Amino acid sequence: MPAPETSAPQQQQQQQQQMPQNPMPQNSPEQEPKQLPMQAKQPLPRLPPTKALHAPPYPLPVPSNTFPAEMEAWQGDGDPAQQAADLEAIEQRLDGAEAVLGAAQAVLAAKRAKRASEAAMQVTRVLRDGEALVQCARRLLHPRHVVLARAHTLLVDACATILAAASRGQAFPDVAPNGHEHHPKEPHDSSADGGQSPAGGRELDPVAVAMLLLRAAHELRATQDLHCGAQHLDTAKLLLDMQHALEFLLSVAPRQLFAAFPEQYGTFAKASKADHHLKQEHVRISSLYR
Image (cartoon, rainbow, N blue to C red):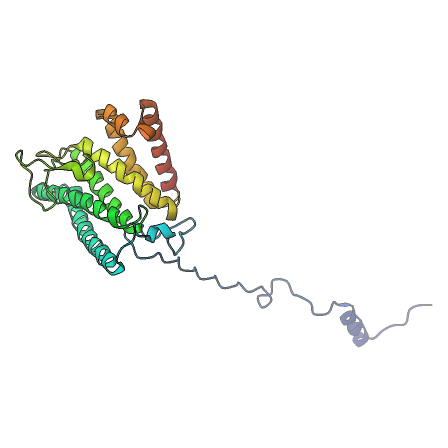
């Protein structure tokens, strides 16, 4: 028998029943998934106030907000009030020395001949003040204290500035900590710094300056390891300063270098290997910040 004919309204009703419920039209702008708003970047953790370990950028894990105990420890027992006063005095002197060094570095970098001699004198005074501040801080603070790290940073920066400018022919007159020039009849007494001070003549000895840089840098590096780690930009800068000093000593005073640092640079092979390692590490860390 032929199938019974259905009317048009019945056919439309059957088609609607066969269609899936709640159809999802293609390419419907109303049904497109909404984009989630971008999550705001969280601010980087703030470091405790110090000028020895600089602020961000950090493309890698950020140092913690708190220093290890030894970076805030005192050397021995004493009157807390007097210790606090002495520490404040050291920090105030560091503030002044850092400002003077920054201004002098800007003059030397700009190669302003008229002011270069005055800037060289200021850098030398900062160097001598830095030596005195390190000695004061050592008597008061733990060897890894953050303020002592500031003093070592000042010393390294002053030495690096002197070596860089001296390589371009700039002379650096020897001055006493109070700012007066030394004269041949008034030799510098280096007993306070173990006989390793770069002072002692009419001009600073670049070899002694480089030796001083390496000593201060080794202390600063040990402190950086506690807080910054091996990926910090300050670490890269310190390694470059060390490499320049080491390269200079290898070329002009290798025997003095070997005798002064028998464990680290006691032979030409040791020193050359260390020089190469410092270069590689500086390049590796710096590349992370580009």
